[in-house]
Image 1: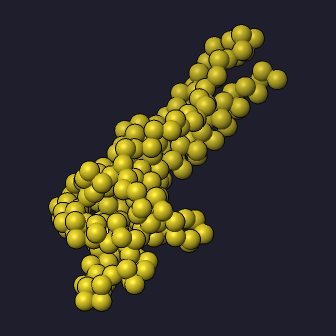
Image 2: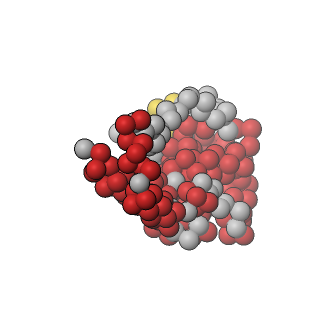
Amino acid sequence: MLRYAPLKIVALCMALSACVTINVYFPAAAAEKAADRVIDDIFGPDASPRDTRSRVEEPSARSEPERSAAAVFAEPATRVLLAAASGVLDLLVPPAQAQADLRISTPAVTQLRQSLRARHQQLKPYYESGAVGFARDGSIQVRDQNLIPLAERNAVRKLVADDNADRAALYREIANANGRPDWEADIRATFAQRWIQRVAAAGWYYQDADGTWTRQ
């Protein structure tokens, strides 16, 4: 069995590189961190403390080699294969890329954050009344127009439309800022979750997974 150890090592490295490449393709943890920073900036004191639930760490892909295999690993051919496999991993997944944060401070993103922050103060009374809520797709919606005075309804509809336009542009610009326009849908989905999870004010409405409006 030990004579097949070098081949198993190469196969394991290739499988590991595939797994890591998937994580680099869309760095979900980095996206959540970026979303939290942006929402903190927009909502200010209205943003609730971050979700402190512990995350389950992924098990290490490395394990201690068996003592009986020591001789196999010491063979020159095996050392060459190990070096080659390591080179493949470094080529496919550069360490710096795997740990990079998302860029959220470009001029376009900064301008959108400022616009959303200013409009938040205008929308806040309608969040508090329950007239406007946070939708599951990363947008906001007029939930109950009967809670809006008739004279204010057109203005509120425009606020909601403008806010949604800025939100859509924000997701797109963050994807573009990181050189991955194909990440836009994933970034939107991440923000959709974090908007809802970070809202602190009691009585604000949001849509759950099946689209039902509920209170935060």
